Length: 134
Image (cartoon, rainbow, N blue to C red; front, side, top):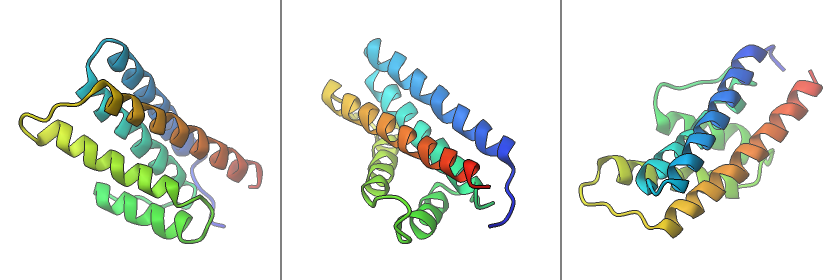
């Protein structure tokens, strides 16, 4: 395996956790659209952290998803349900940020938040295993 920048990996993972905390705060305060968006960015930054373990990156969100699927899902390093969580989160984020009159229910925001928590936890665990084996 190629060497990777462990500081970059840890930085991106911290960013993911920070976004997750902001998503939780937004949810608790009834800002469901913003919670949805921050949940996505928690997932997105966790994904970027994982990709950094392979020295991979993309400037586009679709590129990040594609690399994640190619390098980690199709190789069975991570369960395909995480790909679905990532793609669903992206769709929700785009709708909540750009679609006019998009109403997010408390239940939808909670599901997204729970998915983000599961996703970030799984990615952090995988990253820790990768770091231990380098």
